[in-house]
Length: 307
Length: 247
Image 1 (spheres, each protein chain N blue to C red):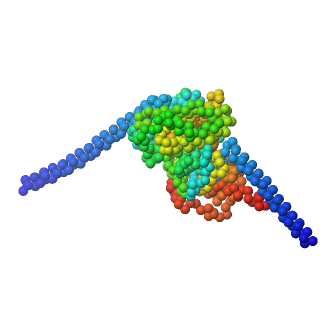
Image 2: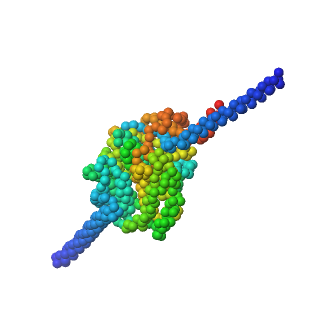
Image 3: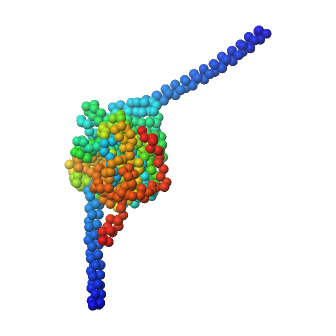
C-alpha cells in the first residue's frame, strides 16, 4: 500500500518536474529569441546608420557622424559640417541638408524604418548653427513611395522636356544638366539648372513666373513624361555671378530648401506679415450662422488633445 | 409750356444718362487702375486674418472650401491658409507655420509646414518647406498647431501629428497669426474658415484668440464671427465697384 502511494507520489513529482521543465524551457527559448531578435535589430540599426553615413559621404555631403539616439522608437542623429564661420547657414548647406533628409527619409527602402531623425549642422568653430527633428510615420506619403519599374526617360530627352516646361522670361539659361542619381536603391535623375538675370530688380520681376513653372513641372513631369527626377538644384545668379537664389527640391518626397540673396523676394511661398493694408475690421457678421462650415467637415481630433 | 417742360425733361434725362455714363467710365478707369496696380505690385501677395501677440503657440481648425477655388493658371498662382509664429529681431524674421496650401496644378490641397530663419534682412535667409506627408480634401477641416515644447524648440503639428521641431528659431513669447495668403493674382478665389483659433499663454494654457487685429488686403476680406472664428474670402468684382457706379 505504502509502496503504491510512494509510486503515485513519484509519478506526480515527475509530472510536476516535467511541467516546470517545459515552462522554463519555453521561457528560455522565448528569452533567447527576443534577445536574438533585439541583437539582430540593434545590428541592423547600427548597420543602417553607418550605411547612411557612407551613402552621404559618397554623395559628397560633409557628414560628421550618424548616431543612433534611440532604439525604440528608432531615432538617429545626422551631423553635418558647414563651411560657415558664423551662425548662419551657407548656400551650399541647402544641398547637403536636403540630401541628408532624403537619405534618412527613404532609408526604409534599404533598412529598418526610422521613426525620427535629428539633423544638426555645425559651423567651422564647432558651434551648432541648425538643429531640428523630423518625425516620420508609416502612412506618410513619403513613406509609401515606390521606385518606377521602367527606366526613366533618357537624359537628353529629359532636358528637352524641361526646356519645354520651364518659363525663363527675363532669365537667360546658363546651364542645364540631367545626371543619374546612381545610389543604392535608387535610379533617379538629378536636374541641375543655372539661370542668370541682369540684376536683382529684373530677377524680382520674373522670379514668380520662373518658380511657378519650375514647381509645376517638378510636380507633374515624372507622371506626365516618364522621367524620374528625384532632385532639383536651381541657382539664380546676377551678371556678376552673385547668387540671388539657391533652391533645392527633393522632387520625389517634397522637401524644399532655399536661400535668397539680398534684395530678392518671391511670392511662390508663404511669408507671414502683420498687416497687408489695414487693421480695420471689415465685416462683423451679426449672425454667427451666416456662413455655416462645410457640411462634410469633420474635425480630425477633439481640441482636448493638445499637447 | 408743357412741350417746353417735356423737352427740358428729355434734355435733363439725357444729361443724367450722359452723366451716369461718364461717371461709370471714370469709375471703370479708376477701378482698372487700382486693379492694374494691385495686380502689378512687385510683391503680389495678399494676406487676411487675425493675430495675437505674446504667446507660446497657436492652433486653429482650418477648413477647405467645399469645392476647388478658382485660380489663375499662371506663375506660382495659389493660396495657403496657415497658423504661424512671427518674430523679428536684428537678424531678420523667423517663423514656423503649418496649414494647407494649394497651387493651380495641385489635385488637392496639401498639409505643409515651413520655417524661415533670419529672413528678409541683409544677408542670406534659409527657408524650408515640407509638404510630403498628407493631403486635405475639399470640404474638410484639419487642426494645425505650432507650439513651444519647453525644450528650446518650436514644433509643427498637422492633424494632431507631430511633424517637425526646430531649434534656433526664437524664444517665446512670440506673436502668432491665423491667416489666408493668396499668391500672385488678385482674381484668385478665396473662401476659408478658421475656427477655434487659440493661443497658448505663458502658463501653457490654450485660450481662444481675444484680440482683434483683422485686416483687409486688396479684394480680400474677413467675415468676422468672433476673434477666434472667421472666414477669409474674396469679394466679387461687382461688389467692389457697382455700389459706387449706382450712386
